Length: 217
Length: 217
DNA sequence: TATAGAATAACCCTTTAGGGCTATTGTATT
DNA sequence: AATACAATAGCCCTAAAGGGTTATTCTATA
Image (cartoon, rainbow over the protein chains, first blue to last red):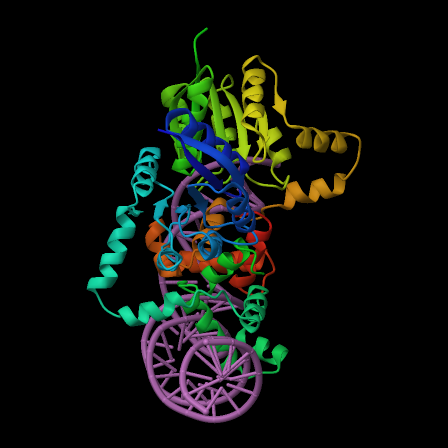
């Protein structure tokens, strides 16, 4: 049996190094390439034609979900497993609509990752139990259409919304921001609420740390 | 030659897993224990008596530098190498005074880590070339004021205040944070007010962007 | 041309934040 | 022994945030 050709995508080189050595030394895996952000992942996929992509979400320039979507536009066959260090579930549903085949949490054991790889390579999707539970909760629970609406508008933030995020992060209140942008404070408040919804954040504090961590501002 | 007993400290389990497999499979290293934060690192050092500690800086509860200081209070022999994902040099000088034996950057190759481990185990300190340059610059009189400002004013916040900043940035309200820290919501509110005053911020949104931009969290 | 989304504006409501003030306890340093 | 500060806890108050709902205008695109 030939080794599975894998593209490893993570913005931390030493994390990639660790995984490369760990996976290659024990399993039928051949890391044919590495990428440090989403754009690079798209390029390397075209160039190297891997059979499997192991990809982080939080990366500069282009995140893992967006990269997965772009890859799916030209390659329907490559398997994509998302590896994430996030403890929140903000991205799960967006990931599901991006055509990914697996979703593993940061706290997973290496053995779970290997199980996931095997299962995905055999043509079956793999989602860890927390993710599965989340999906079942939603499909047995309420507001499916509402959830669908919220999660399928995968667009990041609009220009105006980004302006608002930037000004809020600088410590200005909605009233002051309204004056700066020559609009009504009601509109600024509306923008803030929309932003929180779009990013599935608990409040604007979380929006700010998300925005900075992802280079939105 | 017997294997070097190593304690691996990082708040991301899957990073530890990768390193454990990678290092143990190739070199004379035996990972005798793992820790997920600074406090755990101190405990495990007492308990397991490792010869070498590989430790991240950015960790919850107690960071790597503070943990190193605490460890040095009761154990002068154990070698400590700091592994950091930070691209800034804010912690270098603080690390030097904490009695650490090595400092490796996130972009280092695994081979550099192995070189560092060998060198440190032979009794010599190891700092990568960027760090060495920084130290030489300092001793030849370059950027002294800059360094002084960085190291003496980098974090005017106390440990508890940093915990609060972190939790607020994750979107938790004062009430929830109080529950998480087992203290009164009044105390959390008090901490928030003190933090805003200390940093001369307009509100906590500005605190969060400051804290992230300056690597406090 | 019909539909979707961006940007605007306004109302309802409750919860949270944050300024100012006082005060106790413990610990470390001088 | 005295001083400083961290961490704790409580009160007052007003301002701000944020959830929900509705609605208009403009523009891009299917």
